Image 1 (cartoon, rainbow, N blue to C red):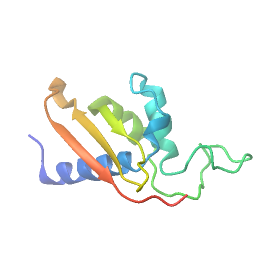
Image 2: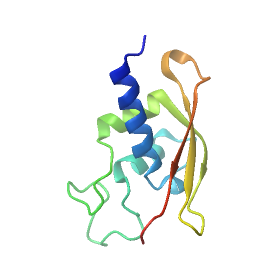
Image 3: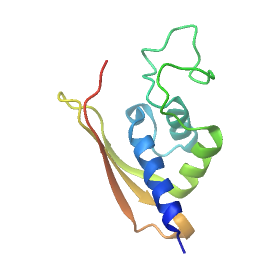
Length: 115
């Protein structure tokens, strides 16, 4: 049984995942998704060339730890992702894989992006 605290944490993780640059990830490859999640809201093409996406300190602070990224890919899959429109809107459709049941969908949106 899922507790209320677990549900709120899952919602926070889903929102954080939606804030990442998922359009750069291969949704069939967990490592690719985990890399996007740990890079977070740091645009990979706009990082300082001397700065690794794995650096401890990056300009954008919304990012997953390695442990959280692994947990996330074990419990959720990305069904579809709509990257930034001209207005900055982005949406991602996730499907829960908790307890082997893949029938709980979540659509998470993000608006406006500053580049």
